[in-house]
Image (cartoon, rainbow, N blue to C red; front, top):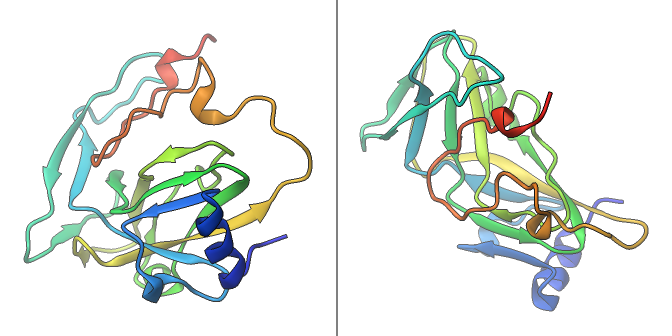
Length: 178
């Protein structure tokens, strides 16, 4: 079950959802619009290795915007810091962004109950397109859960993306044992 606008506001009031900064104008019928933060990152190496720490170079999006190029994975970040203590958050792209040929996540659209951070975006594009810090980039949708959670994400010993940040975070796959 997806939470409605009224229910999202109730859950914010209860402390089950936190969105900072929060702007009621960004609240949709059953979602909350998030915005592109001012930082982007690209991997230093063209060939990535899942067993190695692949480092990124982080840069600030200029005020005049930045042109994304096809064939490059950009790691972006939401302006909004979120906490979700009793629901499963999903991040989806806005249709206006998709109609520009921009994808905001390759596979990681679902958060976990207990996720507390900004959202790293896995941005790619079909053709060159100029983007701007602060532009609406996606929408959070909250799903009700059924049952108690035994291991909240923010308290799991092996959670890899819990350090609060305003910059995008590179893949931590290399921390897995395989």
